[in-house]
Image 1 (tube, rainbow, N blue to C red):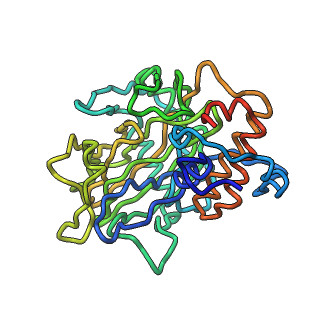
Image 2: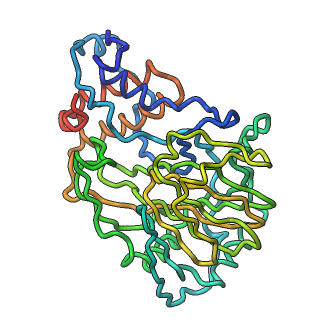
Image 3: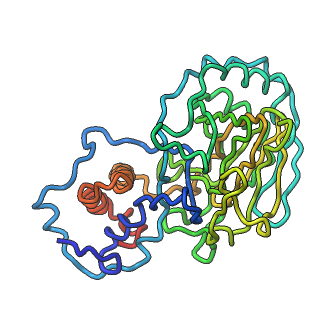
Length: 363
């Protein structure tokens, strides 16, 4: 059997890496909360199936390189909620808008003004009324010290396409990731080009001091060669007061969050890089791992989505590679839920199924 030591067995390293961090949000400890949406392809016919004892015994114990744990992780602390129909969000006719871009100095972020018209913003706000649910699905433990918002989830391809037509020329044309890049992870090495806006949209409403404490965003993984790197916050109104999105220096990652006078968790004011005010139709775009905060607002409506990228050239495209990566994704989700035995079986099964994937993860 495999040793429960990440230095000797990378599968255990993957299990440790995929496990959600202990939630210390109420005690003020610094956290990298990742609370946004993610999609993972599901496998048909092998759901939650771990290798049998004979298969597992056939995998020899051996010394494994530590680099196996340096791979991209799924997001944790996700609250799954039912989506509403895109048909509810009927919009005015497409107007001819030309957004303008301004860059934010000192961080990987920029702003586009004029992405949506006032009429489009108003329509989206009004269509969402009556559909909001509180973001936390545990009424016994509402974490309002960390986030206080209501949300609506919708898959809206037409709206995503409309936004993409307007912003595509302003988005970073390529993302190059190699081993000396601080953003590097073994499974995202290569050149990535943007091709679409994620159609999975999260609408959020913040009222009467509603806020979102410092956090980073998760990655949407479509398949091994399609994923997101940049978050998009699209403002739908101008709040009477507050509502800015605050961007932090990376040092905030290792700092404790502190409580303000209302008990809300916030970051170190000395580490603030920029604040972007909410304006209808304005979009803030930033790299997922940039720590950011939604400061308290009187009334703020936003859409949260991402820019989708495709690896060029694609790798691991054989049927067995695709199947293996789906197994790998399921193993990550099982590990997050604490089912480490089933997760370990799926991790091993994935690497037996695909030699190419095994090589990528340096197994």
